[in-house]
Length: 200
Image (cartoon, helix red, strand yellow):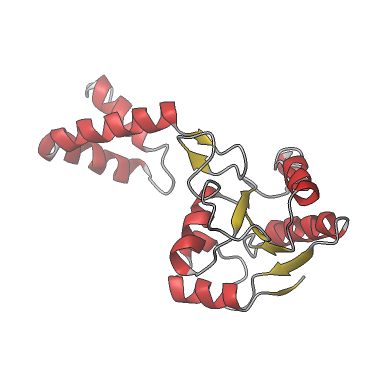
């Protein structure tokens, strides 16, 4: 935008550009749409974003996003305590829940091992995962990290950690393309991969 255009409008466009896959043109279209056609929903969006950002934190057990100290899944006494599924991101929890019949618990890494980016075991909370392996009656650790190079390295590291506690590790199998991201995989493919997991 030129210097003669609204500073507030420019600020709104720049704010939209922080979203993934949103470039300058898309951000501009979103800003104009809200201002020209949907101010009421724009205010609702702003209020919802502020409320979520101020009140959503991480579950103290699995580290997924929640507004409570312990999330809904970790609070569910009907779930299987002997299985723990390790995923990279909170969105992966949602993907697995929607696509599979899995009824165990989760541990969210909030990333993957990437030494070049300064992300090591401490940044992924692997000390917390190790404590769960030590303290809980976990019999199977399901490695559902994304099938990228970093995801595979992370899975291998965690499998070695689990071996110290004689916990069997499995890896989600065929159907998920190499280099893919779980939250972009369709439900039937993810369900098939989950059901076909193998020893790691």
